[in-house]
Length: 294
Image 1 (spheres, one colour):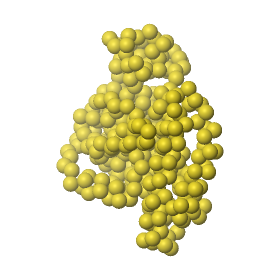
Image 2: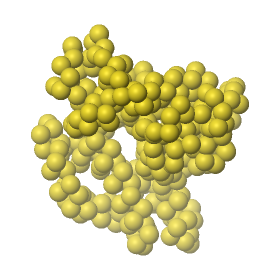
Image 3: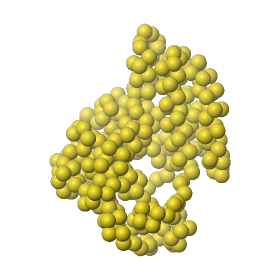
């Protein structure tokens, strides 16, 4: 998820050499025709479509019964720290920082201010260590990239320098209303390919389908194909480890995402409780409310 220009160039080469065949009717720009055309005027978030509950009962509880739920603290902590750290790197470059050591020092000072935002995660074990590890990981990568970029091109404008150091967008907003989704936020969007990336702290088969949701939303707006995505798994093991899986956003992924979307939109429209699954995910935020089986 901490992409550099060299890494993106490698992904671009891989994308160019990777065969894919994606049906026209499963493109986001076919939003006014089935199966992409949503079955309802209501909209959902990508996370709602791919929620942990197999029957979609969590969507019923959240949007029909208006039951509030908690969040998964580990994932939220890492996401928030990652996005803020990348944003801060860009801000310092725009403010005139053009030396790697200076960027490291500035990032370290800024972290002590950012720490206050992590207080809400204090019930999560090692919350400060995890936040600091992610912040330092971002700082280290882009401090080195800054030195390399300035050495190669010492007279770049700040905007050009920032786009070389951080050559992608974090929390990239896309209007998903044409395909039955809310305003979605892509964890990372790489415009050079283009490619979407999703960050996860655990492993579930459904996670790859989120890439299809983002691709459909983007295609519905800009009528530009998004054929590839990265599913990036982030772990804290004394330090931050990241593994990104390169995915073709295939017909199968698009079809499965649309099926899940339609199932949950039907729950909203009919306001019918779909019932409990046979077994519940132990991380489901509604587990204490609905009394499901682990």
